[in-house]
Length: 480
Ligand code: MN
Image (cartoon, rainbow, N blue to C red; front, side):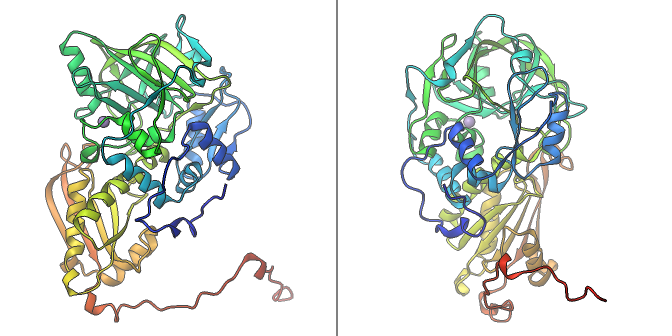
């Protein structure tokens, strides 16, 4: 396995998607990460109550962290798994451009239907009597102010009772004691509409929850919006992403499908007739959600592998937002390639939580391309509802570098002419400054007209190969 670094990650042209199937099982990904030196073990006994999440936050955005000794639990916790670009590339064994091409595969066509297999490692241990999630899972309390302990990395699989279409999505589960959790179903979520249809019929909604599962499912569950409408079957979409069907087992206590290679899998129902207060919870935007009413989940089976590892996503940590970075970049790339042929690359920036701020690079070849850079920004706003700010630059700017993008703004943007504001548009209601999701979008055009490229040519330096072997400790000034 060769770990692609920032220098080699971009070597595959963006129009050459990786061919065929990619092994994206959770343990394959962990093995790749370990081989690439991207997992660190945290020594000492560590507590699920605030301590583990605080360490995850403190060391955010770098290597994955595994906590082998968790107080009161015989199960290790792993976090910050996909919380940095380097980790994502190591986990897939691919550069980020190729990861995005895999995700684009999941947006196209009918996908690859899952393959039901008779047995799988997730079934090595099954508990149906005496389920006590708080004892059996090292679920974390993440932040002081959180309403309790939450399962956060669970991918919820549910079949719409009327259409029969499978949905995969992230929903945090707040432990309520014993076999019960709360599940918040925000407006517009596809699971909410499946639950509403079940409740209308007076029945509970069967679900499976996979914790520590295939990367294909982890990324498909992070899709949303117009690229993954409710009519698309997300188990099949996960198959398309991997280039091979997702292996699943038939549920033993519920009519559900369970990912065969997950670390943990719950079978459960969302009860039609009960509501409890859920939250607060430190959210991805870095603020706490309010306490609100939520339906109740009753878990009927808890299955896990021998020697499982429990995957936790830190609520207000970088992993939460990193899981959407390449999904949103793939979404917007797909739209921009179709709409504006001069777009060469995109980046959902870190400071914008990989959700609200986008950089676009364009290659304007002649006067017929002038203005298309603004069309690209407007198309991006149309593609990604939550987008607030777009910066467009020419392709000699490294849009993955905040410093280089600021350089483009500093030297190529005249605000009176190149700053465009669009008030009264819809974004995400979690953006605190918005009026329940209505806010001002803005774009910065930091490109130069094609005829002026010469005047804006950056000072070139010939590339000199210099390695660390060429550098020595300085002793010239020892006697000064
Ligand atoms: Mn969906």
